[in-house]
Length: 476
Image (cartoon, rainbow, N blue to C red; front, side, top):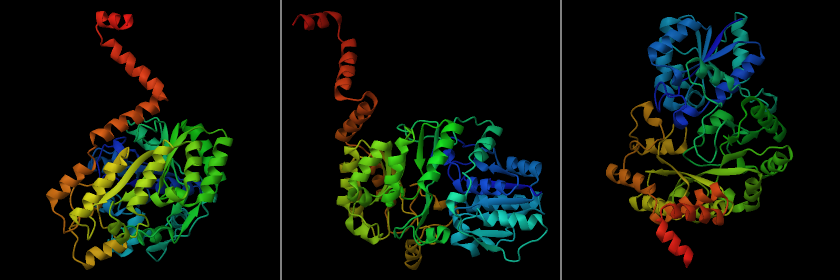
C-alpha cells in the first residue's frame, strides 16, 4: 500500500514555528482534513507535514526523508505559491520518485500557472474527496493518469466522513504543541476548547472581489450538508474534544433561512448549549430579524460581517448588494440581541476616493463594532475586480506573498500611502464614547445586569475610600 503525506504550507503570515499564534497559526485546513478522512476511508494511510510546526526548511527536508512517502499532496492558495514551490523543489531533490499533487484554490483558478512547473505531476481542480483517493488507487495499481489536470467530482457532503482534525493535532503534538482543542479561539467571547465546522460550500452572491473565482472551486451556488449531518458532527466534536464553543466556517451560513431555522430549532432540543459564531451579511440580517433572534436564542454569540465600505457608490461598484444604511442597521440589530460584531472592511479599493474612505471610517465610528478586521484591497486572481485592475494597469503586486489580505502595504496604484496609513489607524480608533460603551457591554456580558455592575463598581470605590470618610458617609 502506497504511503501518502499531505502538506499544509500556511507560513505566508507568521512563518515557521507559529502553531497557536493568532488566527494564522490556529486554523486547521478543512480541505486537507476532509481529503485525509476520505482517503483513509479507502484504506490508504495518510499523515501531515504542517509547515507552521516546522523550525525551518532543513526541518522540512529531514521530515520528508524520514517519512519517504510515495505520494505528496499539497494544498495551495495564491499567497502560498512561494512556500509550495520551495517544498516541491526540496521534494524533487530528496524524493525524486515521489508523485506530487497540488490542489486548493490557486490550481482551480489558475491551473496553467501551476502545471507549467515540472515539479508538479498532477493538479486536482476543485473538490478532492473523490478525485484524490481515485488517483491513489490508480497509482497503487501501477497505473498513472495521462492527463495532469484532474477535474473534481462534486461529492455528496452528507456521505463524506467527518473532517479528520486529528491529522493536525497529531502533527502539532509530535513537535511539542500541546493544544487543548483542534483550533485556537481568537475572540474572548468564544473560549476554548474551540473548533470550526463547515455546513456548506460555495456562495450565491456576486461580489466582484470574489467571483467568479470561488465558482471555479465549488461550482455555482451552494451545496450544503443536512442539519442531521451537522448535528452528528457536533455530537462527535463534543465527545472527542470536549468543545465549549465553535464557529461555522461557511462563507455565509445565514443565506439559507430554512436551513438555519431548522438547525436552531433542533440544536437546543438535542441538548446543545455551546455558543457559536458564523459569517453573515448586513442585508440578510436586516431582512431576517426574526431569524437573528432565533439564532441568538439558540446560542449565537458573534457575527462576522463583510461591511466592506461606508460609501454607497463603492458598495455598488463592488456589487456588494447592501448600503451604508443597511450596514448601520445590521449592527444595531446585533446590539439589540447581544450579538458581538466582527467588522470586515476594505480600504483602498479601485476608484475609491479619500472622501469615500473617510465615509467608511465615519460608518465604523457610528457602528462601533466589537472587533475590527481591516484589509487593504487585494486583487485576487480569478475575480472580476482582478481583471479590472489588470485592464487599468493598477496592480502593485510583484510577488505572490503580497496576496495576503493584511493591511501591510498598498496593493494597487492610486492611493497615497501616508493617507492609507492614517486611514488604517483612524478606522480602528474608538472615540471616548464608544470605548466606554464597549467597556459597559463587556461588563454586562460578564456580570449579567446593570445592578450587578453597579454593585461591583460601588464595592471597588469603597475599597479606596479612607475609613473616617466612609464612617461619616454612613452617619449621613
